[in-house]
Image (cartoon, rainbow, N blue to C red):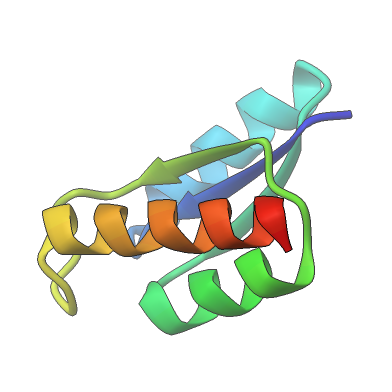
Length: 77
């Protein structure tokens, strides 16, 4: 079962995506911010990240770059 990390602060979006993705055989891990997402990425293998590009706490582009670097590091460590 593929693991999807959803970084989203809107609970309605989380609820709907969770329902849809679970019905279609995916395991969804939902968090509402950068720090929690980083913790998950360090603890678990994630197949796909869905990111809310309007997160208030970070600039989305820099956040994506940081996630990519962590994923590369975890892949080769």
